[in-house]
Image (cartoon, rainbow, N blue to C red; front, side, top):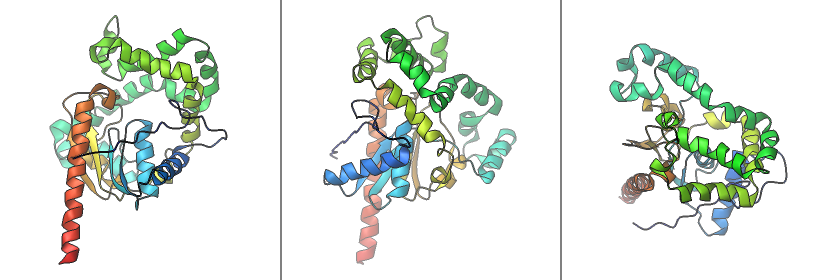
Length: 289
């Protein structure tokens, strides 16, 4: 199975020029990326993403289902509707009534207060970037050491929470120093750390609005990594997908899944695409009979 991989950076990230107007969020990103695919001659395609890429992939799938053959993500969060919240509460006390595999699924979102405590500790960056991104952004564009510290701390905690207890943060346990410095240098030479932070502010107002609650109708897959920040068992994400064809519990890996475990991510994507192609073929054969 051969793939043509088109991997654009969100405007304001990497070497993509930063937006020149306010209000550039995942919706505008979706429009631009679909326009890019059309200009490259691809009317239909599969989408994949992690972190903001998962939100962009989801938004493209919701707004352009006629173009998306399938959506694959490495990060997904529980739905926020009343029924799902009730399920999550009940699952904390009676997991066997809610979850397909209580032993596996319970730990993804429970104990709830432990998960909440962890997220509160780890979401300080999100709050400042979603409210006053230029404050910290101005400091980081002027200090390579500050920029390195800001980014590398995330590579410690989000790869494995236990790494934070190590003197060196176990930074080179999963990544080489060259890989980490390359990531930092992309932000430094492009001078885009402030614009990447503004993306949080632009999306803060819509992240829990209708676009995030609309179900994905195209075939979808989730690769669930044990140290990912956003995790949820099938019972808590079903309302977000009309056609969830694959959930894979990965043996290892964290938030930077494609960077840390590229083979696991690639194999999961291949498996998903193969399944979708088989479903498409079966549907076509039925219509020709």
